[in-house]
Length: 286
Image (cartoon, rainbow, N blue to C red; front, top):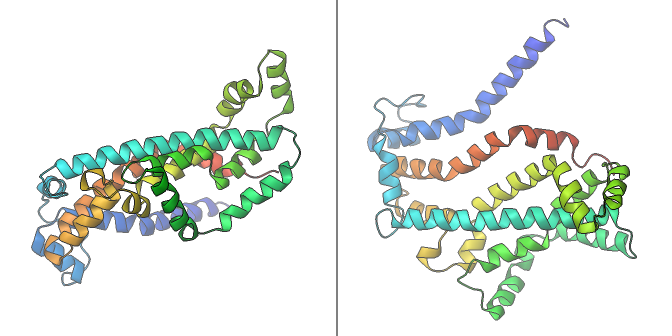
């Protein structure tokens, strides 16, 4: 029986992979179909399509060209806006969360436990509760129709990732910190030269989750960015869906959706090793 266990585990993992990957593969198939066959696949008239009969690679170019009021301009602007906002948010979240997590883990100061508990309590507040107060605040600052409401809050940390960094940093031997002090480093130098490089697994988790969440964020850009040229890909895709949401255009919608998802998939593949290591090691001890 022990000799069959690895085979059984492999078969179970393979079956699970097929179940989770099939919707993505089905999207690829529908995006390459003709309008008639794509509509039939959506309604189930021809059963479940497993392979495109006549791949229409031009569907992708047509979908991206129609994403906006002007050919290609809407997609290029939305892609550029998404890249800028996501890059700023990832950098701000990693730097601020790791720094605050380091302070909670290594610095001794009065009220640290109370503030840490208060910070964790903020995780119980849904985003809808703070949406209107934040909008009023950013409107008073004159930040509406700019990327500042989307990027600036990231530089003040994220409670969940601060907790993860704190738990991970607590596992780092104190001797490394003491050695850095002997070398003449201050607290910021210790954080930058010693702690942050050792936190690569947690940083991978923080970066991947933040990237995916920001890249796919729809509510934030919809509330704070009103002009079409400021739209991110999530908002542009929703506008595209409203315009091309019928069965005759479902192949274009699938093509546009796949292009929007592609950066998230590539990032996860690139950071997979660090990501899995971080899930196994991060936030275990406290």
